[in-house]
Image 1 (cartoon, rainbow over the protein chains, first blue to last red):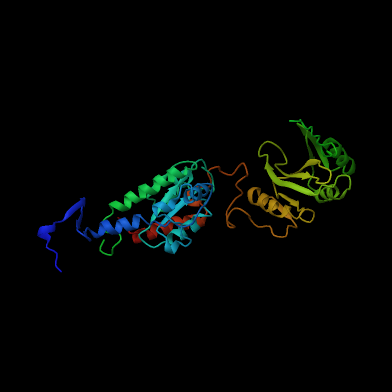
Image 2 (cartoon, rainbow over the protein chains, first blue to last red; image 1 turned 90 degrees about the vertical axis):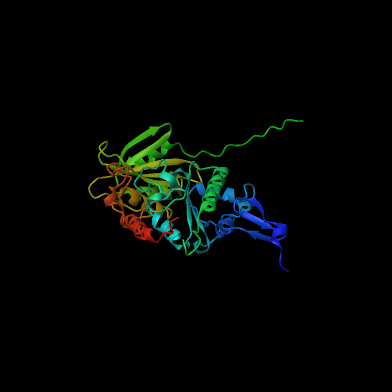
Length: 173
Length: 193
């Protein structure tokens, strides 16, 4: 049965999304795919220092990352995001880089805590002065260590970033 | 509610540390350089030559019985003392509840000392850390490799003449330089937004 659009009409529910009752939704690929991706960010299960404890607390029942669709994934090859949680030492830097290299594109990096952002208090021989020296960082979460709320805000900033992307998911980008 | 008085008998405190220091001095008169006392923490400063004999005596003597090596570490007295280094043994007796600190002097040129792993097996990793950080060679050690830093790291960072901020960027550890170079190489394959 063909629907007579002249009698029903498209209803605009928000900017760029129209609904044709009862069950036709007209929107852009960007909108729907970005929505899907930002609602299911899977970070790699990877912690380096005390920040990892806060990251675990954010993932556990009380702060509950799962309600944002953020589920820690045990393999970098099946995750979207790397949370660099803690001090990166020079000995650990090749390992961090290898974990990042294994994550398929499109991928994101969240630098969690003062040490991962800048090296923090450790201006010493063995500490990397910020993981942005060898990784492209998307979101910096300051704090020593940041509280789980702060990390959640950082992940929401990353969600905002993904929401604004244009065809990054596609081969026509 | 009735108040119940609980009397706890304090454990036997063992020997006074100054007494232990006297015993060591008696047994090894030529080895003991000095005995210091800071807030009842007694250190016996000894020469490094017979350190294994001294430790063996402290470990085996039934009245001392230092069966627990609490810690082993190094100290660098750069430009403050001669000999420059000291290896510190913090000993505790689980049977007698007493402690003593032994400090063995190690000179700057060719810093080495005999290992005590034959007496306390736990000294193994402590000695490796001391070697890693100060470059003090423990003779007779079963596996003297670096324990914390990468095995091809240059220098011993806890020495006072080691630069605090580490080596210059171009003289950095080659593994880290490789990571920096690789991140530059792979940058063109990143999906830019």
